[in-house]
Length: 302
Image (tube, rainbow, N blue to C red; front, side):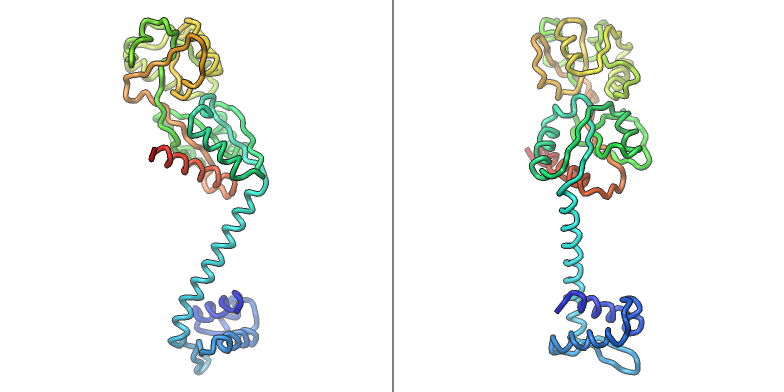
């Protein structure tokens, strides 16, 4: 018994007419009738009753139809799965991230797991501000983005964003700063402080969030120094030049003199989002997203 015999049988059962079934299958009616008779002979039962150019399923045919449909569906699923797996055997997956994204435990685990699970895939990584990543996804020069967006950022047609980590923000300062001994600090207590932030216009969402929170606390941050890299910002804060607010993942950066303190505001958080094109058919993208989901569930269960 071959899959094509099952396809012939199911098509005839759906049409209840040999001529229409033959047209759907793009074969002649006589060969189709011969194949159905051969299937009946192999099974040793009649599947159809034939009368006046019409056909009807026998009781055995009705039972066999359910099994045949199930077998064909399983075969189609197996074919799709094999094709998807074949997609992981090679190719390139282009992933961009913001400065602090790879410092999160989740992304460390995802990148390590992806390389182990799909060793044949070239994983091309690059650092880029969130806004630039969004443009690159739209231009199809990027496959996956790890971005941060403003809380009130509008949807972008053609792109999908899903949260990976709802990450808190932390205060970075010199360990001799008067507030360094506090368990947590309110933004109101920072009104007179000198801030170190990213330069405006480089596409970071965190600085906009910081300014919104400071404005709500009754002031605008006094910026005394700008730096593009989180590591540089931490180093400057550790030197006593000023304070900074960054995602909590930067705690892993050990710089002499740096101290990290939590913020009391409940909304002092900056979610890390996975950005992708909607309905992207790439097996490589699906594999990366699936790994992110696995790691996120594992973190939630821990």
